[in-house]
Length: 189
Image 1 (cartoon, rainbow, N blue to C red):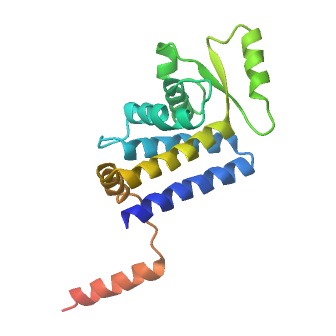
Image 2: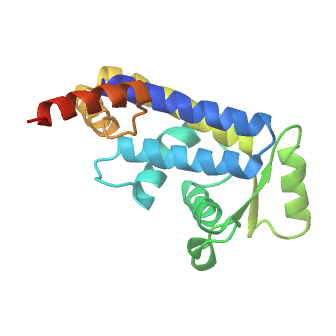
Image 3: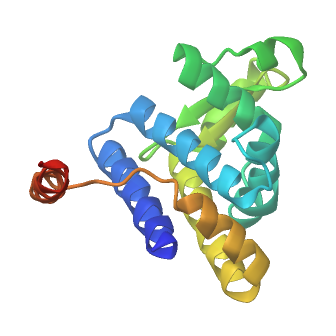
């Protein structure tokens, strides 16, 4: 049950991201990507709740190894905070730490040209170019690599699937009505 919840919800997140990218809803796509990273990072961690550490550790261990991009895990976390909390590239972390803000490209945009523009304006210490599709592909590949590890590591599998049991479930109204009828019947005098 928890195994199927894990895979079902990872696929649902992917389908939501696909839909946003297809409709050119770049901000919502990024919000879903960063949320998906938070979720998988938490699942993979030994922590009770998602944290900056679980996010950064998972990005370093899986995403950046699967799809190298020209930013750090901490820069992605700072970008995540800015986007999720203020829908801007600015976060408390990016204002205090030496992390660059992310300039996103998508579709047929050339990340190399975007980065070259950043470099020629002497802003390479402040900004780094990242393709949304590369970020998404890194998440997908990272999830696949984690899934492969789960098959080989029973302790990790148990931890991840136990946490996945907590995922939201969708219940049909037919199911709710049946349960309600049974409960009301049991409570009847």
